[in-house]
Length: 106
Image (cartoon, rainbow, N blue to C red):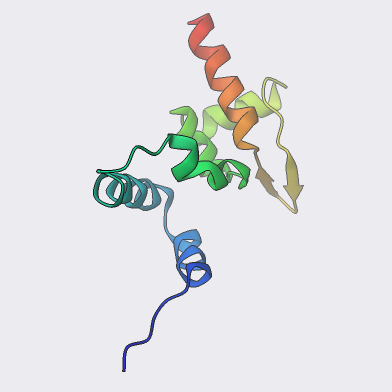
């Protein structure tokens, strides 16, 4: 008897993955599952834009170290969307705008 995994089960498993492995998974999925279809990035990854980024994930997205990300927060250049205990969470849209502003200035 085969036990099938639901989309919710898969998502819960993916949340436990390190961000680098999630990136590899999505790249593999995009290459293999959607190669013959003409899906936009938003159609494939749209829901991910609504998930908050942890500090390590935000640093990886911005291509900076965790220390640099923390300096951005301390200086007021970047603001976490949520603070849960000692953990800071960042909105993907805020990170995207910040990254664009840094690349435009540099």
